[in-house]
Amino acid sequence: QVQLVESGGGLVQAGGSLSLSCTASGSTSGIYVMGWHRQAPGMQRELVASINNEDTPTYADSVKGRFLISRENAKTTVFLQMNSLKPEDTAVYFCYCYHWIRGEEYWGQGTQVTVSS
Image (tube, rainbow, N blue to C red; front, side, top):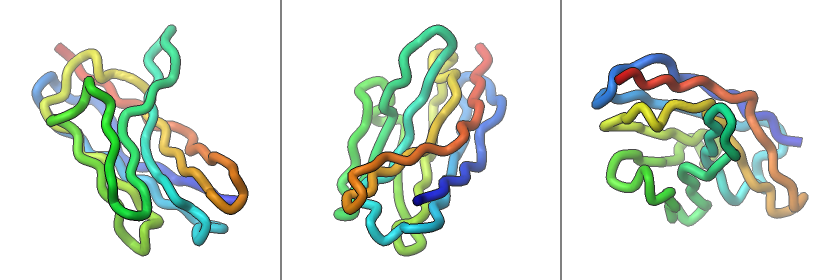
């Protein structure tokens, strides 16, 4: 099992910045990918960004050039730096990881990001 604890988020004006972090504990040696999804009210959950053990990032088109994902601490902590935030970035952001040995995904509880116009 893997536990994910998120921090960060909050309220910011459009054009501002926020950062999120997520730390994994438990069976972390089998984690291959960590990242973030988000879900806005009435919308499907969507991938925001992810990063694998080779530090190769993937970004949703909607956040490319504005968000930056990184990993540290023996790759058990993932960060999401969000710049030039837009009202449409408002959502609950969920940390996730893929455990390649177990073939399972794990999810955090989610943290609210609200961007006011």
